Image (cartoon, rainbow over all chains, first blue to last red; front, side, top):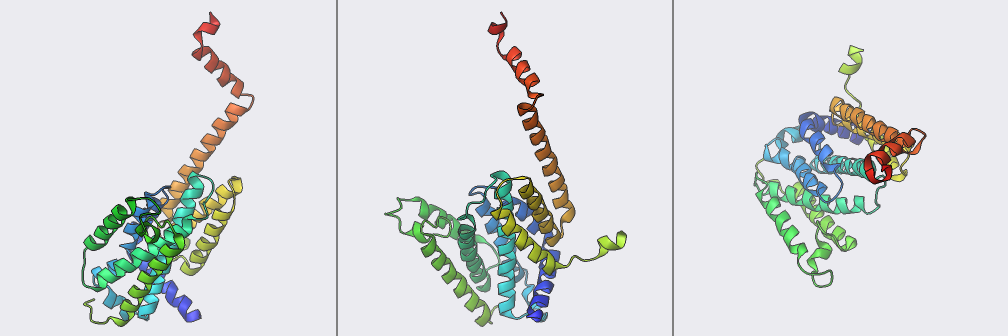
Length: 189
Length: 98
């Protein structure tokens, strides 16, 4: 347990030192109340594990005493804490009260797109074109129809009309990306 | 003092502090105590992200804005508020003066 904590501390040090400017600016962006914060969450995800793979830093990180699973989980936890802290701080500052649904909704979106970014980066793409395209498709597909007619809006990571179905869907994407990250070793990192 | 600022912050403790303070900020209703906790959370997040000067600067601005708004609210509701109300009355309704 102590070993995991010390490795997590080293990982935090590594990530916050190399990406401090972008992470702090995105933290301030996520503080904005309303749906606009999802755009900053999307940008924050692109600064986590995806950026390390795209900039071919993963080989260097793997040479440090981190396992693949630890890198994935630590990166996920770091992003999650930044998002939760920024969202709660922003909401409580601007509105005074934090709605209980805020964290699950952000968690669904974050988990789904974290998985999407990981999958895209592992397939060798170094641009965020595909995740942006998926986000636009998600945005448009959830807009059409009402709650009863548009089934996609139930599981959509952006609209999450049925939070349980949406969370199951996003956890599925995350699990697939986690398995791919651990077992897919043919990539050029 | 210089040595203190050159020390690297203990990340895991700051990380745990950020989590605890975030939970507290979310649970407590709007009050002076919540604002204190809110600003502490904000500065702790700045220490975690190694941008404590930026975050502390924003926190100082937020404090000054909160105090200014608080003073305006006091002026509006307290004894000195009568002056503002009278002033608004004289400025706003010319027909009453006639």
